[in-house]
Length: 207
Ligand code: C5P
Image (cartoon, rainbow, N blue to C red):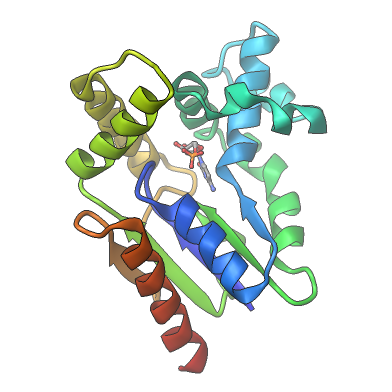
């Protein structure tokens, strides 16, 4: 079974995807990490993330970069959002994601375009979302927990800018795919969101 999970930053989709994968014993790919690696590589090479050729060159990052803790930072997230606009960068990462999705037994993938582009054939599709305020609050608590000094307003502004870029780009914009079940996690504790996600997957696979 392929499970496609899409949604905006800090919607809870990553945690939900990991839990769904563990529940079904399926391998999981966080596709955002691939775009983050491109963003990080462009930064390390001193390139310009808005330049399609320089961003594409960074798509040839080394595998060890995927282990770099700096990939998780807000700065890298913002760079990822900028390099992911370029269709050539998306094309360079396509085969790897599709091969992962189509491995024998299936897989869980989370990102922005899994159900729309990478694996429209997925048996289960979820679109996980939450209000900007709820997402900013979570991200803020997470960052404060790591000792980072940030304001909620700054995070909210960054999330809103990233959402806007992801939703309005021409290449594979973030949107709820046809047939994808909507899961709004704004008011849900994570355990309840995971239980709701598994119930939605069960409903779709039996349909
Ligand atoms: O999910 P995450 O925050 O790690 O993704 C970082 C950025 O990578 C997103 O803002 C988005 O622009 C891009 N991305 C994408 N397609 C995906 C996954 C991530 O364009 N499948």
